[in-house]
Image (cartoon, rainbow, N blue to C red; front, side, top):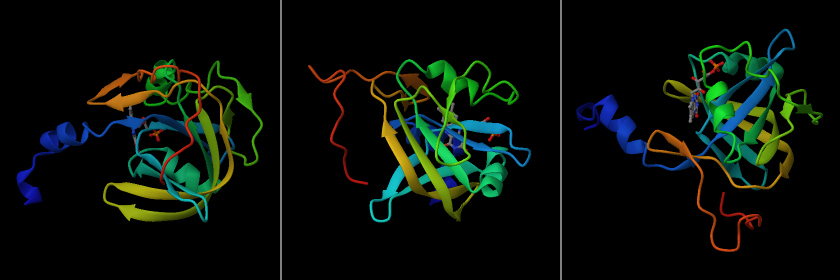
Length: 175
Ligand SMILES: Cc1cc2nc3c(=O)[nH]c(=O)nc-3n(C[C@H](O)[C@H](O)[C@H](O)COP(=O)(O)O)c2cc1C
């Protein structure tokens, strides 16, 4: 059955899955900060506290995460679409230029500005076709406020806040 679905149709259809947008950071073998934009990010387990990120095998960040043994998830704010595009661009040298970093508990570089920040120690890597499912144990987590940046049908955009809830923090949902 799946052979009848073209890649273009599959991409178009799964584009209807609205998601948040995150920047995943870590350090390469030389200790330099590296990172990329990801929408395939989710909480996986509450006990133990686990996150998962689906990382393209062809990307450059996967080997760095494996080497560093840690990564940080920065859930982007609605005004950070430029940052999402910067960390998705083919040029990797200037992704961190002009960005303020803040100390974290792992060696992963932490961006000062984000909607939420979650630091993880690498727990496991699982096969996921042309991606690898990277699972991390959460060692620090902080919600920093604002509204999230969303990715839907190939577009980055801002959600409309429920009336009177523009700055409130939701209680969270199921993992
Ligand atoms: C909105 C958006 C979401 C993305 N989500 C993912 C993702 O979940 N996993 C992934 O591996 N790449 C994703 N990408 C593509 C990477 O950001 C892009 O290929 C990047 O250049 C990879 O960098 P690297 O090769 O330095 O690791 C996404 C790109 C955009 C614009």
